[in-house]
Image (cartoon, rainbow, N blue to C red):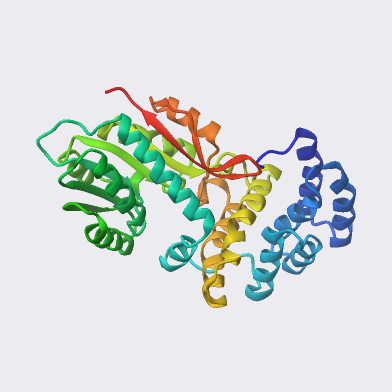
Length: 362
């Protein structure tokens, strides 16, 4: 799903060269028609050309090219987006409002993944009891969202170990989400729950915030559910090293996408973005919500992310989704042993989302 063959990359790079040289649309179209039969994914050459044309602000040409592959869901959505917005630009800062994400959590894709995450955290808890301590059992949760997932897994693992109370340390850069997570957990967790909220990106926590987390040691484990792909590889490694100083156990759940290392305009990057976000958007289109909410979710969440990844040079992206194999390398470099990943959502028999445990030295 994420990979192109070397010959396919070579052929698609001919399209990139043509568009960088400002080749007229009809000539680019002929080149796409020549290249399409040489690649396994039918008509992807149109998708690739359309994305590159959009990044060069050739919006009318991009729309015409997206329309050529309109049977592809990503192309269909991008065509409608450009027709309505008139520019290949983000319509808002992703997650400026939490509502688009909350609409997305209603999708079967997310709910299947969520169930898998809870199940895997329970399996972890069975085999890794909380540390013996006179203080509260403490979990560090990175990017808890609205706290619904946290409440689910805490209730289950509290029952497993007959916990009488729990402390949760939430790290999230959005005050709105921290407040919602605290309120939901205090309401829905079945045992007394203390919540400490730290408003920061996990990779940017201050010495004072680090000291605050250390005050509540020992920490049973760190959970990061779809929350640590907002940093490039070179930042992921020191972040994981910092987490290892808090707890030897780190539970990661993420998407198996290739949006970190590939450079801007590369066939590998745009292929991964188009294919994976197309799958991601499918369930949103089928949600039983109003057309207004559906468009709010699409335009202010996955489409904004996709545009940012495609359009920005690597240092300026807001998302750096990483494949399973690359996460294994990152974890090893950070000093962890890695347990085999467990797929929480499969697409064409391949992991689309997954959970993986990292274990440091005790």
